[in-house]
Image 1 (cartoon, rainbow, N blue to C red):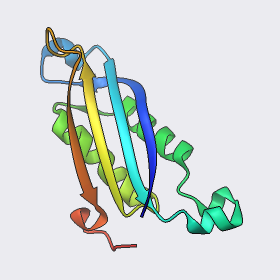
Image 2 (tube, rainbow, N blue to C red; image 1 turned 30 degrees about the horizontal axis):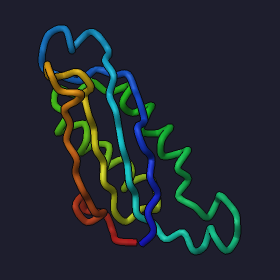
Image 3 (cartoon, one colour; image 1 turned 90 degrees about the horizontal axis):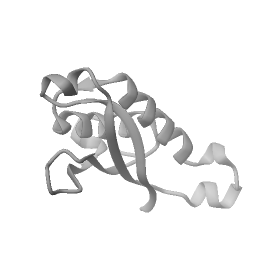
Length: 124
C-alpha cells in the first residue's frame, strides 16, 4: 500500500475536560498518514481516481471545528473512523496533539493506527 501524508494540520476546536477548555477554542495539531493504492490515479492522472488529500484534510478540519469532545482519545478515534468510512483508504494513522497542554512540554498527544476492519467496514 502507498502512503499519503498530511503533516501538521492546525485546527482550532473545543477539546478537554477543564471548564475553560469547554468554552474557549484551542489549537489542535493533527497528523495523518493514510494508506491507499495510488496506481489507478497514477495511470490516469485523474483526481477522481485518487483518495484526495485536500478533501480528507477539509473533512477533518470541519469535523474538528464542529466537535467538542472531552478526551483526545475520542477525537483521534473519530477522525480515524471518518477517514476510513468516507474515503478509499485501507489503513490510517492519526496523531492529535494539544500544543501547550502541559507546562514544560511543547505538546501532548495520542497516535493511533487503525484499519477499516477495526470499525466493522469491509476491506478494500
